[in-house]
Amino acid sequence: DGGITQSPKYLFRKEGQNVTLSCEQNLNHDAMYWYRQDPGQGLRLIYYSQIVNDFQKGDIAEGYSVSREKKESFPLTVTSAQKNPTAFYLCASSIGQLYGYTFGSGTRLTVV
Amino acid sequence: DAKTTQPPSMDCAEGRAANLPCNHSTISGNEYVYWYRQIHSQGPQYIIHGLKNNETNEMASLIITEDRKSSTLILPHATLRDTAVYYCIVRGRNAGNMLTFGGGTRLMVKP
Image (tube, rainbow over all chains, first blue to last red):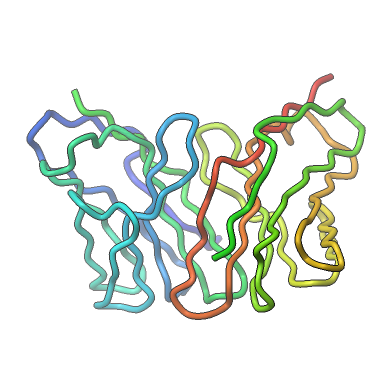
């Protein structure tokens, strides 16, 4: 079955460490997105990519980095520059502008 | 993209219709109305979208007013599994238009 997979589901990081969250899709979607969600809040866009080897900053890109070397993969790195990284991270993909997004099940990152 | 206004929370009795309102008074002519829902600790799930006509699928119905300034998502027979946060989003079709998620409506379906 086609879908979008995020791993790991739970991740713990020590302060000052970089960590990479995985996002893989086999839906043949061109566009991929990363959102952050804090408790009781809506989703905020971190980065997005509409095509391989190209990506743009979203509303809260500071302290994050991404790459898009393959159509299927859009990993997110949370760097030590991110001041408050503890959050729920959601990856999504889209075939285009009309049909909306398919989301992964999320990664919950906790800084300890 | 136009902003939306939704009530922060609503209750609904199991088996009854759940009607979730959304105001989008600044919507422009090429902007669609999307609805998503998010069950606790999961990724959001697409429900339905529309431009000006009413839409129905296996999950829900979307009623858009004639002036397009508001819409209502209808879950015809709510079940306990419909308890979730429901997001109403307005988005244009141009490249670069992203889905922007506000606070949504927390729907509690009660037995």
